[in-house]
Length: 82
Image (cartoon, rainbow, N blue to C red; front, side, top):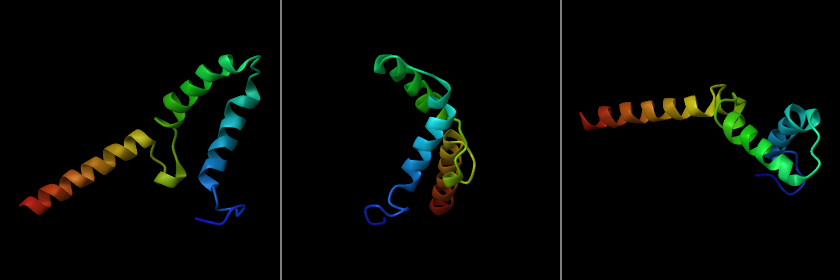
């Protein structure tokens, strides 16, 4: 963790918001916050968190990364118990 104001202070969050701006907000105009909320929710929960590939995870999408993690832990648990 960096100090306040360092480039590494919040790099992942900064990257997320830059992507959100580029891929969604720069392409649409909202008159009110209530119009933006469901669009942002669908974008984050339906695409960004579930399917979008993330370099911080080694390029699989988060759902696939979680599957791989669980498979590896199950194999390790089986190996330990035998």
